[in-house]
Image 1 (tube, rainbow, N blue to C red):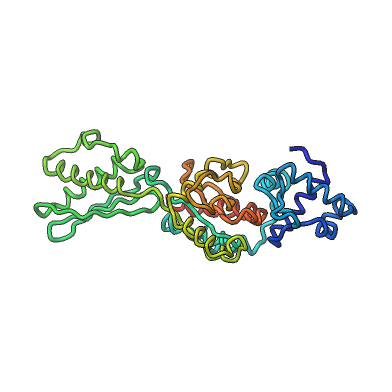
Image 2: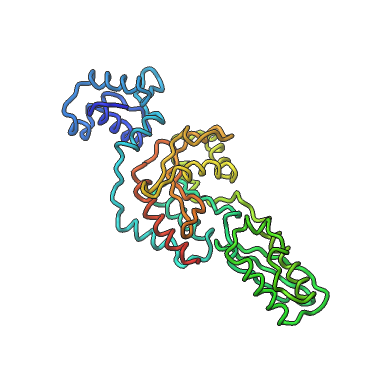
Length: 357
């Protein structure tokens, strides 16, 4: 969309003023806007009214009421973030807060994502949300098998992202330590590094070659089935949310009904995974982060979903992308803050996650 220099400056000024005030912006406010005047020179109210009307005709602004000023549309925000937004410098104290908030080495992916979301929410003033890795994309790190008297064993499946699943099962007699060690070594040799999705469809016969002895084969087979059950029961739709209370500070959610609908949205892990799939698909490393605005988030069965914007980054281990961590605020959000802070947080998150390997 081709705008002249004055229209571009006016659109940016309207958006930045609306972000700060949450009030429709009119020509009188623009005449008195020192930054706008410094950029384009002195302009009459009549000229600004004409330009505002043209921006409205182009679908970049809208007028909530006939006698009111204009507010940005999703298309207006999109043009602004694509062509006019400039990330700001990240302050030293902000970097220090990110470093101190996100621990390294990390104890688990869920813990470090909770820390990351907390830091992002505090720094931006908006809710921060992250999708935990889909279980199928997670990998086996270790299988543990220990005696639990009398005549029981406790099996633990530990995944690469720090998930732990336990199963307890009975055995007919006390087991020699040597047999138990043989089975544990066998399971770790065969399963370590396998994706849980592949493990779910793996047959014991495919890996049992080289294992000898009826008792050893029987124990290994039972333990393997419990590992498979654990992999199958790990859920895929899990999220971490921090800073949800900040929504109540936003005029868009001052109505208690809107606030309730927004809260329900953040509590719906399935809906949030669907919403955050869009920035995950849009994310490109060279762009630092993905920005998804309003209706670009797609259809979700919640009336307030498309009143949000998301600024998100992908995270992962090595070359594996595991999920998204994002700021999620009203479309009238401080995009410059989110766009500047998210990549810094993403790098710290990457460093912390790599300590899990």
